[in-house]
Image 1 (tube, helix red, strand yellow):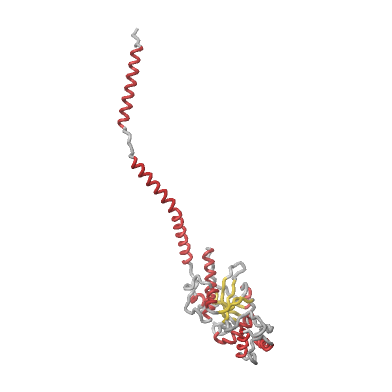
Image 2: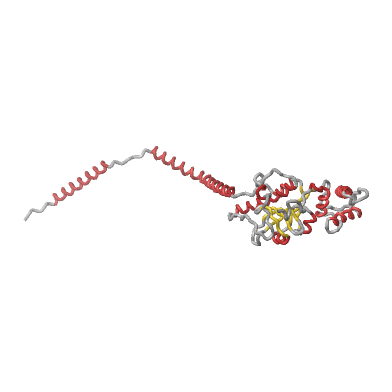
Length: 327
């Protein structure tokens, strides 16, 4: 039988195997030496990381503002690219009258709400400018130059008065002033401003910023107009309404009496009191222009007195060359 190894021999073999494993592990560690990172490098990396985080924290809102600005610039550029209405082309075309019964060639509003609002504002500014030019103001101005201006402020700066009155065909004919109207092409359409510049017994001429010069019948005008008429007129020195009748002399009443005398409507001295002579003169003025003869000097009486004083210097809507029916 073969001789069995002794316990001592086995112990020596185990120790040799353990020593060999240790040598191999040591050799492996020596083949892959550990890299020691200097502390200065660690500090540098930490500093750079902190700087990047700080930059993101502080510049984040700025980038958001930049993006919003860029988006806004794109939207403004899109609005600017929409064709704008100019006075020479849209308000005073040579031969673009639309006879009653014919379908006008309308320019539809943009589907973009912001652009549509800009078009409606542009229409009101254009219509207002057309009336101011009839009064002799801003003749060389264009809508582009006046973009963003408030039409009501332009009227005030021109020294004109304005008042809203019901759209009554006979009343507008008696007052004889161009005016602004709110027009609706259909019942569901948006209102946009147009200028009434001509009026006869059966037809009216309007300047529509979205269409051009239009001739419409009396029923069509009343059907499409929504709201009141905004009438412009020129105030007279020393006169203002409402006229407050007070005891004693009033400089406003005195100025009114002087004008009534100059127009041959009143005789006698200027007293500054709203007496029976003054009331009778106002009644004559009102009756001459077909107004209700109340003897009270109000806005409508002021309009017709101003029209009588200014004469041809004030614009008129009565039929003239180029008015309704012209070919």
